[in-house]
Image 1 (cartoon, helix red, strand yellow):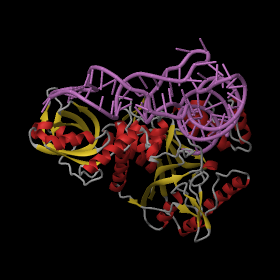
Image 2 (cartoon, rainbow, N blue to C red):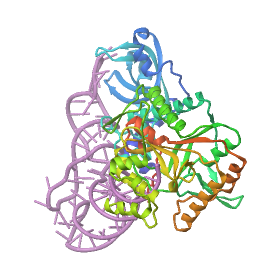
Image 3 (cartoon, rainbow, N blue to C red):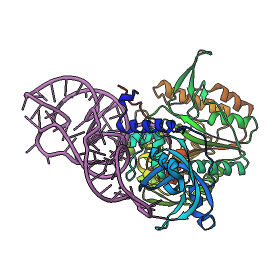
Image 4 (cartoon, rainbow, N blue to C red):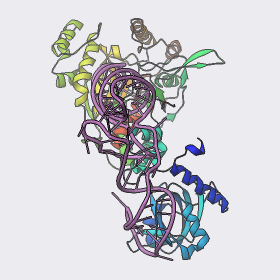
Length: 490
RNA sequence: GGGCCAUUAGCUCAGUCGGUAGAGCACCUGACUUUUAAUCAGGGUGUCCCAGGUUCGAAUCCUGGAUGGCUCACCA
């Protein structure tokens, strides 16, 4: 950008930067180490009064009164007032502060006192310039509201909107608590490939990329599932991965093309173990990070305390849609019930798929309290084990809260013959035009043929969980840099 | 992808009937040694999202486009 094109506010800051240099101050100078965070000084005022401290931070307000000036510094933890006096600092150092703008980083050293109005303040004996800000910050009362700017320039959002910073700190702590909870239970954190030859483990379209040296297409993973189960074959009995997955789908307030999941696999475990793990871990991390397990999400209150409600999909559909699939034994009668309920069906849907359509349309919005829906139709669960004596259904559950899915778990299918057939069925769907159906993963079958112990597997959508635990209405409020179209440049 | 809405100063926003753009904060100049939305006096800093069109004249009306939000579809 040309100097001529800078607006007046930016020109003024550059002028001041030049004046700092003229007076021997490097505008991007050395670090200053703080002795305390802002909040520590305020909280420990009784002990710290009159003792000398050093605070560092960004200048977020200035009130100049001629020969005395007040300002607030914002650091990682909060804000604290600092006080400059001409008679204390001397002409040179006092007048130098006139070259500071809102947004600059400085350090202030001096004794702690309380002003007439009662605010804990650091009186500068000396102060240091650390970094110049060349762009004006958003306005102090209203902050930055433009959501597009907030997402595109999250750094500004974080500077001026304290609650945004707190949400992302909470997100980090929730993930840390999750990691702790799993490690304490003896799970091993692992990392599996993000770039894969075959993107499997979920029903979704992948992103495609290209490896130049190998001259081949690679897919960004849509799930971590199939690699983690290979590790169960290898004898790593309890593994999990917290990681980014990528799905080439639409964007909404509950969907971002890249999002974070935790997938957890446990040998010698089943669906019931996974339910207990889900409700216990989520309850635990909420307690640890939020100090409560009572959640209010967008005005709806619910409790995370286990045990959560358990309903089979058929029970849920009977309860909320008033349709009893136990009495609809074939596809024709199921389709008839759908027509009667005004449910639009795609061509060729089977009884299980129609059941799921009923569930999604009539039940999901009712599942505000944490609820496990279990016993899913086999057609939509190609990686889950069949229920003994009821082979059209699988040992699978999904966990819901606030009407949204946050967890998906199975007793894992470990029969390689059955798994191959399931993949074949998926391939048939793919040939029929379903580009979200699974592809065949021969190596995964190969692994199962070596033998995989009975196991339970669980996936949790971290972003959604964080949304619920931080009362965030949009997934973009819990992803630092959500996917956006690039701004058109002229 | 469809529908609806939004886009005006660095930020938050007004802008009437189509007559050529305003406020607060921020910023600049001056005063002020415990202020805190500091105060007081003065100063408007602009590609009205972009490109066409209608018109004597467009921030305003029309068409197309861009970006974002909500929503439906799809997904987690």
